[in-house]
Image 1 (cartoon, rainbow, N blue to C red):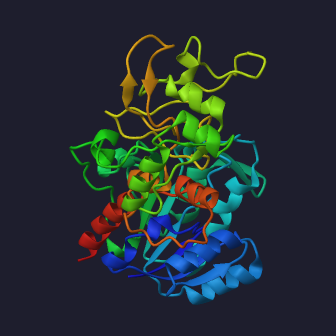
Image 2: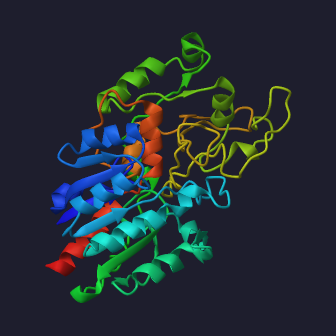
Length: 377
């Protein structure tokens, strides 16, 4: 199958395409840094860097994509995600318009549209008409394509150790008489305990300096070296001393906001206000919550390692290990990326974290695509 990818990001969705026999001949991404990493990961794909709203970009996309089998489009979700500000009229929400115009001109056999669940409730203005995004897609494409019956899918139901819910619309050309639906759910839910049981514990690097790090964590170097033997991407994240202290006193599955003494606070002792999933350790007996772009910051949404109980007692005495966010290696596992994912050394940690956080778990995409290939065969 020959495919094109719109709003490609760093290409997480396409991770397993090659082994499925799907050849992405052309990808489009506006951001140069994302585009550079995509090209590194997929050297045989032609990368078209630029804004999809640009007429020249659209012409190249259309001229290059005649007679393709599959189009995948994952427009930016930041204007709709519950982790974002959801500003009314965010121009990123309207990029689906440009994708639909391209689709109508090239008319691929199969289409994979992916976004956050909130897209189903998000309105855009087209030709002075206010429409829900799914209603707009149906209005423009229902004469040409059959749609899948269900749109919301959870990654945790398909062998991914992450709860992440996505809105995925699957379309097939009507003349093909193919009904492309989500695959059957897996019975087993993969917990973080099962996924990470052999991944070495790490102490964080204290932002205030190496001396403070060794003073707080005497085994820091021993753990760090053990982690690097597993993977060059399993190294200690860096965090502020006060964040480390709060999370050291926070049990698995709990938020530091529940602490009576070691709660998130300003230098003057005033409580910090936030979402109940901020400063939260994840639970060992559940999959991870959705990994967001800001997954390297302890104060972000549910991104702190579950930790191991080191010492029992009341809040003043208790102690938990791994008061840190997940490493890149752990994020790769949680997002169903291969352990030997071919990341270049020149990629910055913050950029990789952002790319993983904004991408769809590729095992989920793989299973959906395998269902399509089975239908075709």
